[in-house]
Length: 307
Image 1 (cartoon, rainbow, N blue to C red):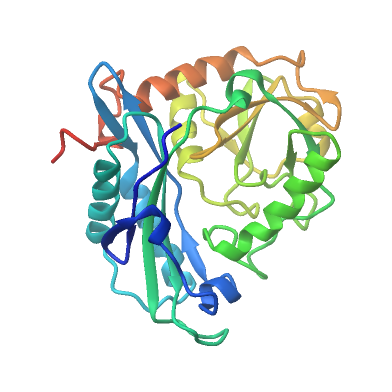
Image 2: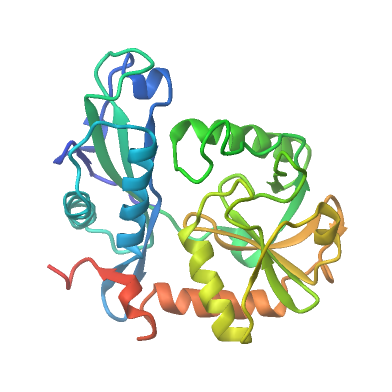
């Protein structure tokens, strides 16, 4: 897997090794920053990298900066230009993951809102084995943060300590991944991915008020499931034991893509295999994001032909 050569730092391309932040920056000391995770997919037939739902990701980045009160002058257009520039400069011809980041720079205190630094990094990222082979999950003893403590719908750096604790515990206990519960005891999400299940033949996912990130991939799959099944996904509270009775389940996110869940707490999900609808959804999703179909073409931003 090739190493990226350049990162965009404060709007300027710099060598990968020179993209640095001072150790005393509030972004480092206090986690005072936000970010996005954007996927790019290589289509060898069309010799193109397609960025998936770039405007939606940049809109969410603006929302995150607003909630975190970052004093900035970044526009969607400026960040989008840096995203395209860094992908082209690295001449990627493979699947990639792109991370725009904004943080409080300088050496200020905990309440500082500026100056603001920003960067866009892109790295090659092949598909994980879990997408095809599935995951065994545990329900975590770590509860998901809620909106009265830290805003889960914001992609703030500090929020991911919560996810890190839960994910590490699951792996140390012999699982592949984790499901976190809300403070009320309902299913929220995994460590960095949203949750869906198929129960009684119907797609179900936690509501946006269930301490989840308002995932762009989640919104995409709600649309695709309606197209595949003719049914609207139920968005509601999900009890832990409902998952034990599901026919299928999966995690989703820009980084995670669509990862089938084979078991939860050692209870098989369905037959303990990747479900038929999950496979159909994966095929539909990857055809779309790779530009193999003209459907939902407005979700794709071409990198090289779009100059």
